[in-house]
Length: 208
Ligand SMILES: Cc1cc2nc3c(=O)[nH]c(=O)nc-3n(C[C@H](O)[C@H](O)[C@H](O)COP(=O)(O)O)c2cc1C
Image (tube, rainbow, N blue to C red):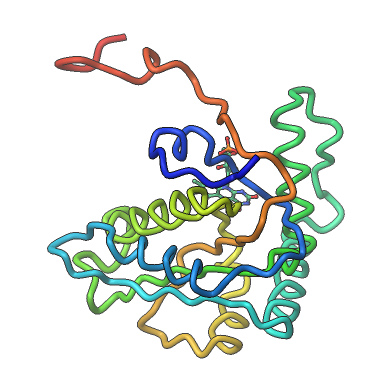
């Protein structure tokens, strides 16, 4: 069965976090289509305050993955939570997957690193700044799902900012806001687990 689909509702409903990938390389033409989808996103005043770094180079990924591993280890020291102690099976699986990924980030053959270009941003910091780049991230993750590729939005960048800037020649004005590993999935797509609509939908005012 093909993992590809262009049914947008199916894409959204099945675009779950993928944290394991096969070794199959990803076609650069497909990567460009995905980045193009990111560039179609809206931004405040249409300022498009972004740059998207695609990292496929083995050496760069290995060196930065080692930095992520170190940053993650130093964050917890000897007090790293043990996912096996989490009673809820979904949460347990999620945390296990997240920890494994931070231990071996280079397992993903492609990384997308979206950067907010502050000088072009309608708002340089805070939630409003994020609101002009996160739509592009969602566009890319949905496009990847449509192409049959797995992604997960992750945020280890703050812990390795110096290494990221040095390894990828990122100027001060560009702020990496996420790291999105991507590849052919070694796990199944969705459906995603979410609360029912009625927990979130409020017609004509907030009603409990
Ligand atoms: C802002 C944000 C930050 C996230 N950071 C991480 C992360 O650092 N590591 C990770 O493995 N997953 C991360 N995730 C993925 C979430 O854990 C995942 O989307 C959530 O558990 C729902 O999973 P599902 O889409 O598979 O249902 C992040 C997601 C978002 C939206």
